[in-house]
Length: 253
Ligand SMILES: Nc1ncnc2c1ncn2[C@@H]1O[C@H](COP(=O)(O)OP(=O)(O)OP(=O)(O)O)[C@@H](O)[C@H]1O
Ligand SMILES: [Mg+2]
Image 1 (cartoon, helix red, strand yellow):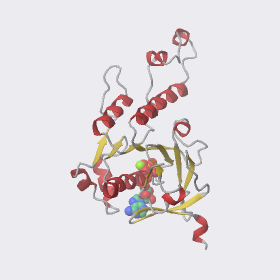
Image 2: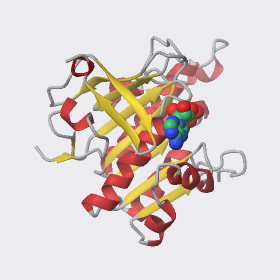
Image 3: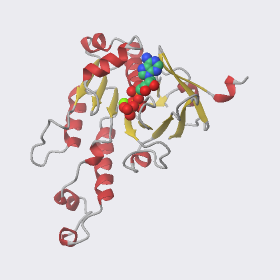
Image 4: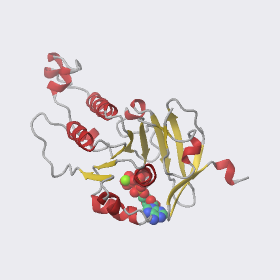
C-alpha cells in the first residue's frame, strides 16, 4: 500500500509509516486542540518534501489569518502559494449566496476538480452540516416521499445532515486525493464529529484533546482502515516548529 508521510514528527510511527494514499481522514477536536495547525503541517509536508499540489479549503479563517498562523511556525505559506503548489480558498458562507439548486458540495467539488490536488484539507465541515437540503433532493435519493412533504412531523433534521455529509464524502472520494476533513466537537463529546456521521464515513479518524491547564494535549488514532495503529492516546505538543506526537510510554522510559 502506498502511504503519505504526514510531516508530523511521531505520527507516522503510530500508523505504520503514514496515511494510506487517497484515504479520507477526519480530524476532530474541541476549539484550540490544534486541528488547523496539524492540517497545515500536513499540507506543508506535501509541498516542501513530496513535491505535491496541496489545496486548503477554509470555511473558518481567511487566508491572511492562515498565512499568519503558519508563519508563527516558520512556514512561509505565501511563498508556497507563489510556487503554485499550495492554494488556499476561503469560502465565506456569510457573504456568498448560492444559485438555485447549487449547494456547497457542488462548489467544493468544483474547487477540487479545478485544482486537482494530491493533498486536500477542508477546514471545517461544521458549517456545511448546518445547511438544509431541499425536499426535492431528498426525494431524488429516495429519502422522502410525498407523505413527508405534508407530514406535520417534517423530515428529520439529522437525516438531512447525514445525506449532506454522504454526498460530500463521495465527492471528495471521487477526486482521489489524500484528504483531511476537520470537524469541531464540544469538549467531552461522545461523538467524533459535529454531524455524528462523518466518523463512520471517513477511512481514518484522529481525535485531538486538550483538557487545559497542566494536562497534556493528546492525539488518538481512533481508526485507520487497512492499517494497524497505536491504540492509546499519544502525547501531543505544539512547539515553535509545529505539532509533534509521542507514544506516552516512551516518555517514561
Ligand atoms: N506558535 C505556537 N506555539 C505553541 N502553541 C501554539 C502556537 N500557535 C498556536 N498555538 C496553540 O494552538 C492552538 C490553536 O491551534 P489550532 O488553530 O490548530 O486549533 P483548532 O483546533 O483549529 O481550533 P478551532 O476549532 O478554534 O479552529 C492555540 O489555542 C494555542 O494553544
Ligand atoms: Mg481551526
